[in-house]
Image (tube, rainbow, N blue to C red; front, side, top):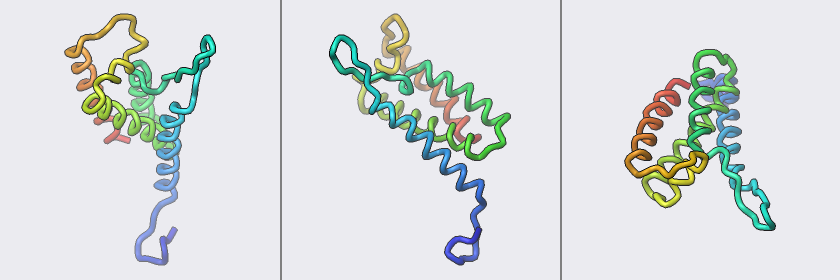
Length: 133
């Protein structure tokens, strides 16, 4: 389709990819508006911003890179991954006190060295997968 009667055109797959990316990013943002009430107190439910979800995302991204022909599906996975990378970077470098919340599903307390190893490992894996999408 021609864009503003210019000399270049954009394929419809690129628009589907962007729409999927916006939807995936919105899924990550929607977590801020989901609340769980326990004993009359309001607390947020963290599903997306956790290390276990990151590992699940890695498998979804591998599947998306190798098997999904849909631009919308790839964009959706890319949007979720982009959100996770931004949040993980921001929490690790600027909000260290919130970094432990990424590991709340693990029953023991991790020391900073273990957290650093996990973060750098996930950054390499996620970065390479995002470049492939």
